[in-house]
Structure formats: C-alpha cells, structure tokens
Image (tube, rainbow, N blue to C red; front, top):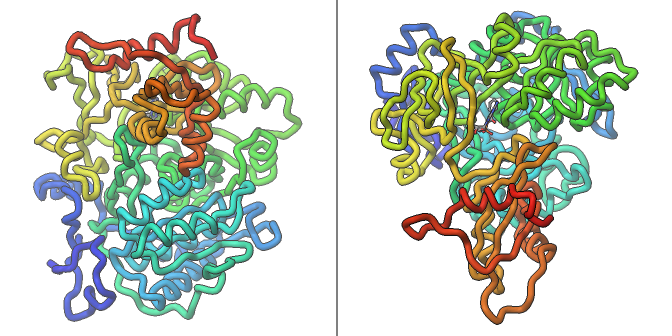
Length: 572
Ligand code: OOB
C-alpha cells in the first residue's frame, strides 16, 4: 500500500514508479471508507469491477472511436456548435491531462471546477480523472462565499471557470478566491478573455504517460445539499460511482443509442450520474448539452438532436408539461423523462405522458449515494405516487423512529441507508460524521419516508434543517449565520414555506436589536446577497418578529415557524 494518501496535497513525485499504488486503492484517510468485508462483498457481487473513469473513456474510444460522445450546441468559440467523438474526447482529455501535469497538478490534488454546460466540462473532468486529481464540483450559481470556502477548505491548487456566463463575470470570483485560498496556484478560464488568468485553451500539451489512479481511489468531491453552516464534501470513488452508473443505465434503459440531454447544471449529481452524462458515456451514447433549461431551448434540442432521455427537477417538469402542448417542436424522440431532486406532485406527474408523450421515471437520490428509481415496467400508480426503489439489491434501507428503532413497513420514519455506492463519511469532517452516520455505517439521510409493500419509497418530509427550493438545497443555518452578521439583527431563523411553483421557498424570521436602526426586508436580502452567497440562498421573504415560538424545553420551534409561514395570515 502506498504511503501517499489519495487526496493529500502530495508532491508530484510522491506516487512515482518506485512506489506504485496498490491495485485497488492508494488509501483515503480523509474520510471513513467501506470496511474490507463490505468491499469484498461488493466486489464478489460484481458491483465494483475495478474500472476507472479514465480507463472507461479510453476503452470506449478504442471500441467506437467515431461515435459521437458530446454535442455542445452553443458553447464553442463565438458560440459555434461543437461535436466531439469518443476519440476526440479521449484525445482532448489526454492533452489536457498532460497540460495540467506540466503545471504540477497531480494525484490527489483538488481542483474546483465551476463550469456551465459546455463541452470543456468533460474535457477537464476526464483530464483530472486521468491524473488522479479530484474535481470539486461547484455549481455555476455559487458565489464568493461558497467558492472561497471550497478553495480554502480543500486547499485546491486550481480553479476552472468560464469568463462570463449568464452575465456574471467569474474572473471576479477568481480574484477573491485567490485572496482567500493561498493554495490556489492556477485559475483556468474556458472561453472568452482570460484576463489576469490562464486560458484553458492554452493548457493542452502533447500526451504523456501518466500513472492511472486505482479503482478504489477517490475520483472527485461532490457537494452535499447541507443542513449545517458550511457545505460538506462527498468523497466518491471510481468503483462506487461507476457501479451507480451501470445500475442506473440498466434501470433507465440507457444504451449506445441513447441521446441524453443535460439540462440541469452538469456537475450536479442528478444530471451527472442518474444516469446522466457519465452514465450515457459509459454506455457509449451521446450527451447533448443544454445551455438553458427553458422549454424553447430544450425542446428545440430534443427535436434537432433526437434526444431520447433527460432529467429535470419538478418545477421544470411543470413548466415543460405546460409548454409542450403549445410547442411547435416535435418531441417524438423523447422516451424517458426523469424527475427528481425534490418531491414531484402526483398531479403534475399525471400530466407528463399526456403532455410530453414519454414515460416518467421518478428519481429520489442524493449526492451521498443512494439513488431510487421507479422502474419502466412499474404499474402506473407506482410511478405516479412513489419515489422509486433502490438501484442495488445490496442497498440497505432502514426506516427508524427518533430512537433509531426500526419501524414496520408502511410506517413513516427516518431513512437510513448503507450500500455499495453510499459513502461512509464526509471528507475531513469527523464531527459531522459522528452525527450523520450510525456506528455501523448507515448514512442518516435526513429524509422522512415510508416504504410500500413493494419496497418502493414514498418521501413524506424531511427532518434535516434544510429548504428544498425546487431541487436546490439550502441549509437554514448557513443563511441564518449570514443574516446574523448584520449589526441590526439580534436573531434569525430560516424555514421553508410552500410555493406553488418551487414546492418550497425560504422565509427568514428576524428579530432586530433593541434600538437598532429600522431595517426593511429588501435591505436584509441585499445584505445577504452582497455577502457573496448564491442567489438561490437569498431569502424569498423576510418577516420581522418580536420573539420566536418556543418548544417545551425552550428551544426555537421551527415547526411552529413553518406553520406560521404557511398560515394564510402570513403577509408577503
Ligand atoms: C439530489 O441530490 P442532492 O444531494 O442535491 O439532494 C439530496 C436530497 C435528498 O436527501 C432529499 O431530501 C431530496 O434531495 N430529494 C428528494 C427527491 N430527490 C432528492 N426529495 C423528494 N423526492 C425526490 N424525488 O437531489 C439527487 C441526486 C441524484 C438523483 C436525483 C436527485
């Protein structure tokens, strides 16, 4: 076993030829991993097959070099369409990997990747996979608070951004990230003027031989939706993630003829792996990048590219079902629409087939691992009223009460899970891990569910202190901390309130300091925005109160605050 931990900021030479990595893993001491008896079981069952992302792309490029891997309809230089075959993507990943390696980026180094839905996303992440560096998957909506944190907490050596996207200049983010994270040696800018930074287009170099990471090594860090002050990072390995792709492909009938439209931000776990763009590439299919999720753009691409499958969050599914009957585009090629990320209402679910002419699959997943799907051959009522069942026969599901006692089937309780692609701990977060995992390794999802007799899961609610704003997750505590930083604020509590379109939106209850300057709701929102938080985390509504409702033991009752936000008397 190598002494070089995957993920440690090791010098480039540390994983040199005199000390080859073990065939399965170079170790990942930053987070608890599967005990060997489980790992052995998952290998014996054929779940973990010893594949890596770099090897997977290499293999597909050898078997079908000329098949199309990625279509970027608008992200090329001057907005041109780009079509990359498997051979082209493979060659580009090799060249980008060589350029990164020449800049000293190596095995275990973290690289924050914040790219929109452009072809470079795949070029960069496959290059990083090949050198064993770990992409940290930021979302385009993240701003200086989140990016500064990702860069400094992971001690990232590089940060990859677009120049400008949707009117926002990411180079300004890079300037602040640099100031916050001394580890950040490189900023690479995809498309447009790189300004003070380095153009990504200038990185590629002649391919060099690079040692492949081991299948058990970390492949990347995903972000948790979070329920705490700062987001947690989710360490996923090649073997475990690839298993979830293979399982997803089988369940969603993704094969080499599939054309997947990537509508949601490419780095999010849902469009990345359920079955998503990586599942599609694993199957030898074609990924079409959708720059914006609006119906006109997505429908145009469905027609022109012959899209067969895509995945969206419930608010988008609602908009699409409303727009489709009036659209002139032919959506006939679309055979599956996956909907997940937040609870999909039965009412809208019923409209999917009549409006879009395709099958619906509900997906209830999490970046920590467990993903559930309704099956294509499930009875219609199951598809409309449940959030599916797990990918793997080795996914263990427990529904427990507040004291961790298992509940009988049909009763509602906390969902705990353990399995071949569910992490055993967050990255460098021992205190969180003690709370978020049981002693025997079950992940406490924070979701409140019940099981049907057929083993399907129905999501009934949530115990974690999080707002699910149309699939975008907001940790209440994180927003509260930002509001509390305002000098006029004495205390703050953020809760979810119902929203007909998003499902939930955020409502911040604020108590002002006695004698403080009078503050109005827009000023609170502006304050939070200016602290550099992603826009979706800015409270939708701010209500000033004199006191918070309390529980019997004197704690703030978020339940009562939620009820207050829901009551018709609640003012906008
Ligand atoms: C997906 O992943 P995350 O990590 O952004 O969020 C996970 C959480 C779950 O714990 C649950 O609270 C909620 O999002 N959620 C759903 C849901 N799908 C996710 N709640 C109700 N119904 C659903 N269908 O959101 C994600 C990852 C992979 C595939 C799909 C979604």
